[in-house]
Image (tube, rainbow, N blue to C red):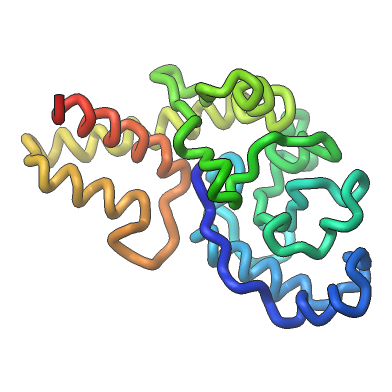
Length: 211
């Protein structure tokens, strides 16, 4: 999971909310909304960081605070995120498909919550947090330690390490360039799936080098 910087909401969403602030089902411009969410998240799921696309079926419009429990948040843009299908149709669900109407204490799109500051990626591929409550929620509310996600995160780091072996010895400047490329500071395109695992690893390495 990584921080999401929200952009300006679609004008059609603001107009619809003015007419009826709780009528999400009646909002007819969901394709545009879905595309905006995918774009601002740079092509990765708000929770697991798997690849998402603007096409219907590839991305779900997730309500961080659920429609059932928080009807006044149904059309609030800061409450809307782009999530992957989350294993729908399979025996192992995660992300929004697993979360349902349950609450999550941290919103990746809320800069005050700053999920990047508290999320940890372990060597065995698991995700956890320095906040015990959020650490529990990552498992019990989002199921982000489902084996399939652990495998994807481990492979993302392994692929990066294989690239490093080919490149040979890297300077501090090169490490920083890698970091900028992977966390999206060096470009405006889509991010690599599960990129935050590698970003976390590089940041730890740079912190060790600075000691």
